[in-house]
Image (tube, rainbow, N blue to C red; front, side, top):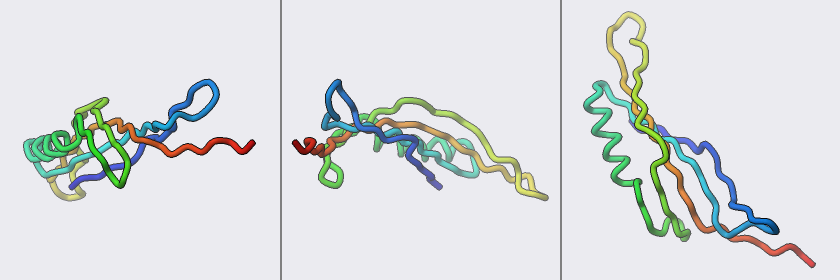
Length: 104
């Protein structure tokens, strides 16, 4: 299983306006029943995203990995010894932003 969420998304600013580039941090967690399966799934995600350059939804996009991997596991379910392993990775994406000039 794969879960993801946005940590932050901010436009890049300069002294007098917002620049046409925004930054977004994205954390992706991969879950599996063994650590080996978790690492394999996380590697597939990383290989698809790390250093990605292209166009997504009409926007130029650039992605780099900023932290990870972080390994962990959930406590066993009540009455079982079955654990679920997790690996977390954080990526940073830069994309073009349409900016409007202030009305004069």
